[in-house]
Length: 367
Image (cartoon, rainbow, N blue to C red; front, side):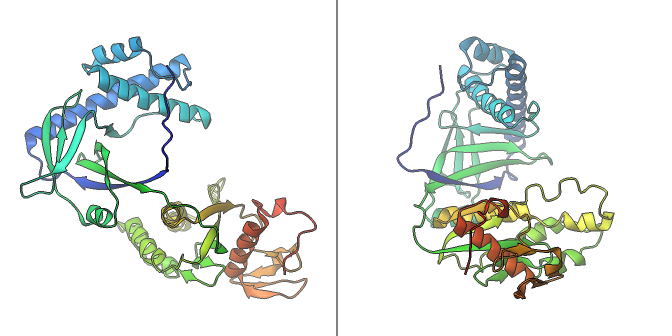
C-alpha cells in the first residue's frame, strides 16, 4: 500500500513552542522516560531494517514488519505502524540526499490524535495533555503555558491536534506544542531587494536598511570560556530583524552561504575560528524564512560568487575593486559602500531571474 497524501485546499504554516515539564511528579516522569526510550529503540530498529533491505520506496511498512516490531518492543500495532512510517521517511530522505544510514540520537516521539488530546486544565496550570492509549501510557500531564505559546495563540495561531514529546540531552522532559495557520498568498507587487549577510558589518539591504551592526563588536567581546554566547547572538539577531520594514518587499534575495566554510580547516587561527562560529548565518536565514512565509514574500537564494567585487554598471569585476569596506570600480570609477554594492548586485540577480553572475547573458545591461 502506498502512503496517501491528502491535498489540503490551502497550505499551512507550522510553528512549535516548547514547554519543559519541570513540575511533573517522579512517577509520571519515569514512566514517560521509559516510553521515550522504548520508542527510540523501536524507531532505530525500523531504520536499520529498512536500510538493510534497501527499501527506499514510498510504500508503508507491511503488516509482518509492523507486527514483528510490535512483539519485539511490546508496542501496540498502531504505535508500531506510526514509528515504522517515521522510520521510512527518515530512510528515504537520507538516501535521496546521498547520506549514510540515519542514526536516531534524540529521544522524541510525535504523537498524533490517536495517542494524545490537549484540553484546557482547570487547576493551577493551563493545559492538560491526555495520553489516551493506543500505545502511549494512559495519564494526564499538566502543562503550564508560556509567553511564547500565548503570543502564538493571541496572534490567531490555532493549536494542532499533534504534539511532540521528548527528552533533551540533560534529561529534561518537554512538550512541543504545534500551532498552525494558513499560508498567505505570495505578493504580486513590491520591490526586489537584496541582502548581504556580513560577518563584520551585519545585514545590509539594497534598499538602504542596515541592521545588526553590533554583531561583530559583541563577538569580539566574548571571553574564551564564556558560556551562553550563541544564545546572546540569537537574541541580538531576533531583536535586529524586528527592526526591518518588510512591507514594501515582494522578493528578498540572499546569498546561498551553505558551503561558505567548506575546505577552510587549517586556514584560520583557533581564535578566529571560535569567533567565526558565532556568525550564525544559518540561524539568521531560518528566521528570515519564517518572516517571509508569514508576510507572503518570496525568498530566493543566490550564488555569492563575485557579488562583492563586481560592478553592475560596467559589468566588470576586479579584485582591486574592493578594499576593506569601500567599493571603487577601477574601470568606470563607480564608488559605493562595499556591502551595499553586494546587496544591490543580489537584487540585480533577482530582477534578472538568474541564480548567479555566471548565468547572466552577455547582452544584459542595468541602468
